[in-house]
Image 1 (tube, rainbow, N blue to C red):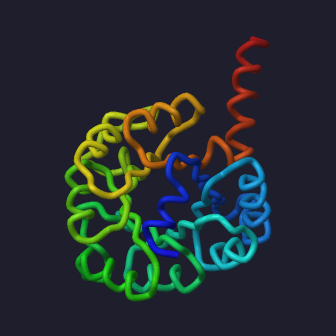
Image 2 (tube, rainbow, N blue to C red):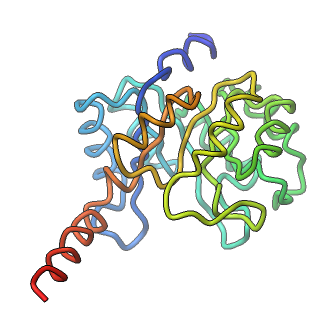
Length: 228
């Protein structure tokens, strides 16, 4: 399947980010595989998965496009921070490798263009996680196959918003020649639909679907306030 065909499978669809942090009850390949299978049953067009073990397990369990990443390190750049991280995720079975494509320096000292080229040589596409329009345009010019608004609100150059950065979605949709994925703090179907209306190729949703503790907390807080 070509890269264009792969991205075409995601057009207008929902990508569900199936991730759980270390120490959480759902952490680990067994649970994330079950989560991925569940969201695919619900109509997810693709999944986004963290870490080589989870990527490998999920790849064997679902037929939809898999966006892989590797959160590692405690520096500013921690989403697939080096070329070696990216290649490991590609080898684990990711169709698309997501990596930090902000203007911040990457820990291995390699430029973004070289990292993208290495991932392409490994047979995978690259998703550029950015925080600003300028970063998104630059990443596309350097060869990224698609761009995601994942990091808006997580860098000094981007606004800290309670909800999704729909202004960034609209701005990038008007500037990019590659598919744009809307991601970050999308918590309702209406917000997801609005992102598509503004020009997003697809929408990525994580915690609003896959983090039961956080979802439960939202309900329990409201009920506690109602009781008081």
